[in-house]
Length: 134
Image 1 (cartoon, rainbow, N blue to C red):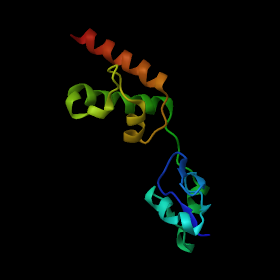
Image 2 (cartoon, rainbow, N blue to C red):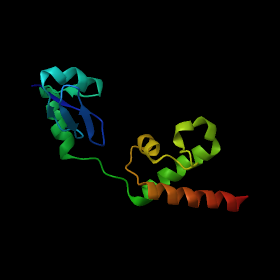
Image 3 (spheres, rainbow, N blue to C red):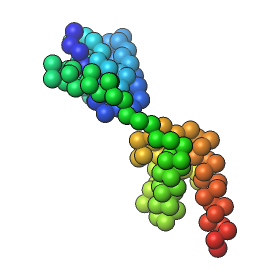
Image 4 (cartoon, one colour):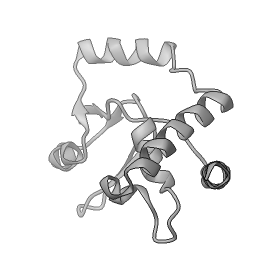
């Protein structure tokens, strides 16, 4: 059984196969995958680990990336809101049917973990500021 991992992921990824196997790939954490499931895991973005990769994975685990502070997240969100507000037609997937920013889309764009309540409250404040400027 080869070792495989998902590079450059910030969240766990679950891979379920029709062969009855389910794997959860945590960020930069190798997982043993049966030979019959290697191609399925690769379709989901997993790559085989060789000795050079294993050294890099352990080095990455030693120094995890620093999560941005609340102020930094708010600044990133406000900058993204400015882009979205300026050109809403260019960001179709960025909004929900209710007209609010899509939290999952923002997480992918900013590579930051966000909560829906945080995004909603900042969006409401942002819209209030824009309305007050008019």
